[in-house]
Image (cartoon, rainbow, N blue to C red; front, side, top):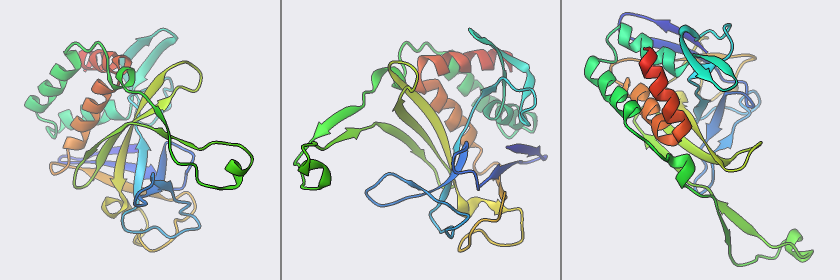
Length: 241
């Protein structure tokens, strides 16, 4: 991800052909979970969006969004502010994120939080009628996992808090994703995005200005509520900036 700051807006450049990376194209399917789109071989359609697993810290000084002077001291070593933190800092510099909005976010980050969504939600196993299929024929029973997710939906973006089981530890983890509709993304080439396949290593830009600057606030709030760990990190970040 690359960031360019102008006097009245921030432009983010994002890849769209990395389905296993931090940014991938997703498609809404009625009644089902969103599905990834292999946009190098499938045409992009109206309603498709970029799902960006946004971060706020990194251990890499080569990250294009890194802020070397925003340092988080973690048990496994220091990490540096990036991505979301870069957006907050740049938006403040050009007065896109105004003082009252910044102070509101700072107040949320500094307010006590004993348990976040990660610590209070559960993934529930639900059994129902057993339809006949290949698995049940051989004695397997069917069940579903009900996973609670939270979505803040706006006109030109949405912010999602996803709950999942931790892969290398016990318990749940909360992850934050920003959704950017392709109709609001601008191709770096002259060809419109919708109705065609993506080019190799193609990137698009998304603009944050006065009309949608709330995307920054909503993402900060999502992290502040997602877990006690994220909340603590948000507090440390706002102490730095």
